[in-house]
Length: 318
Image (tube, rainbow, N blue to C red; front, side, top):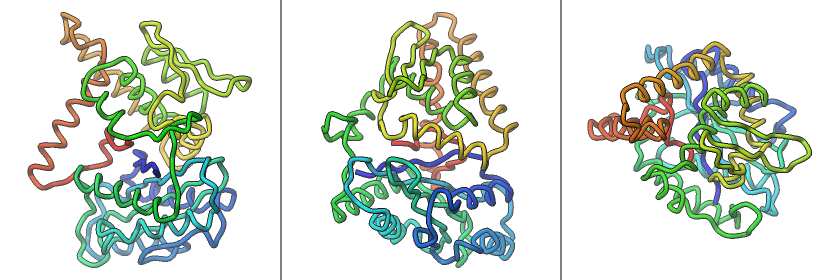
C-alpha cells in the first residue's frame, strides 16, 4: 500500500511555505497536467493561502503541512493514475474546507504525490489538525484507494507484503534497530546533503558506509551492530533515492540555521538524558526515550481535543 509521510520542515514562515510550494511544482520533477489544487490554483496557491490567513487574521504559528504519498517502484502504473490516486485522497473528510496544492513527481524510480495544505480553512478560519485516530483513518483510506487502482507496496525485493503493525510493534519496546530508525529519520530531515547527513549521523554516534559502488547503505551503531537501509521500515523511505530527495527538499524549502538548531537541540536533549540516567538503564536508547515522551505529550493533547501538531515531529512516518 502507499506510504504516507509527513515532512517536518520549516513550516512556520511564509518564506518556507513559498519554497515548499515552489519545490513540489518544479518542472524538473513534474509536468503541468500532473499538478493541481483543491479549492485553489497551483499557480496562485501561495497568494491564495496568504489571503485566507489574512482574512481570518491567523498569520502566526504553523503556516502549512507538507506530506507525501509514495508508491512502490514495482507498481506497473502511470503518473496519471498516481495523480488520480492523489486527487482521490483529497476527497477524504479530513481535507474538507482546506486548500491543498498537489503534484505527482516522476523524477524518481518510485512515483509519489506531494501535498501542501493551508493550515487555515478558507471557509471558517479553523486551523488544520490531525489526531492519531484520524491519521489511521487516512492511511486506511489511502490503502483502499490503492486497492481500487491495483497499486501495492512490497517489502524490499523479497516480494512479501509488509504490515505496518509488524514494525510498529517493535517500537513499543526498546531495540537497537528502532533506535537506528529514529536516528536516520531525524538526520534525514535535518540534513541538506549526503555529506551533512553522514556528519549528523556521526554526531549521534553512528557510522555510515554510503558508496556509489554499493546499492545499499550500511549503518553501524555505537555498539558495533550493522544494518542496511533496506532493513528499515518502510524501506521506500530510506533508499538512497528517498534520502537524496529529502535533502533536496531541506535544501530548497528549509532554513539552514533552523536545521542546525534542530540537530543541536536533539544532541542537547540526549546529553541531558544521559546525565540523568546515571545507572544507564535507559540511556542506551535516548531517541527511543524522547520518542516515548513525545507520544505521551501527544496523547495528553488529544485527550484535550487539540489534535496533533505535526511541526513538533516524531511518529508521523508509518
